Image 1: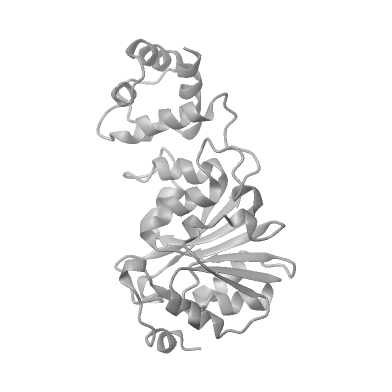
Image 2: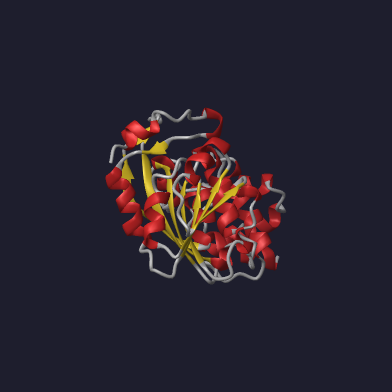
Length: 278
């Protein structure tokens, strides 16, 4: 199937970040990675002209496609699949929990500039303990920029500046793994960067058991706010009292000159709890 020939007749819109996946092998990999059962409902975010959609409807009980572009919706309607429901809306303004009664899986090829907001919308923030969307999602297959995928899967030992707030946001409510890399020529028009398929298996419980999740969110936000500063100065800049910061770091054996990107999620949790007790 020549996806390129089909895609080039569609007027893509740069403002919407449209880059259509035209690599048939990658499309088939998405279907396999999604591990679709006959009774599964799939919510597809950013289906575009439906190259992935037309495969999803062959395997799932129902596919709910959320698309913002009216022209793309006209193409989706041509699929004429009885198990396809098309929703014309911005996904960030869509309450996914109301789309279906039971749980569902998410497949998404999203504009890269809104990756973080979409992850937050799907999983909830770190202190959102009863997020309606997350409670209904089994797992997520997400196409993102390769650099973003590395950040999502990073840890305190990763190279460069990969480990940060996006890492913790992604991993706090899901087990995250990179499924495969996807070259830029797999899309039309070709983006300037390579991409990656990422899988997020949603957790029923948060990664850490904490007494105050909002306080933890405040601590990590401060910890990564100014990467050039050490953890002590970051926390001071974040409004934490100097005496408490000094005592907490000493109690946990954390060198005050350590940067936040070198503290594991677990150690950030202990730091939050210790500061909270003070």
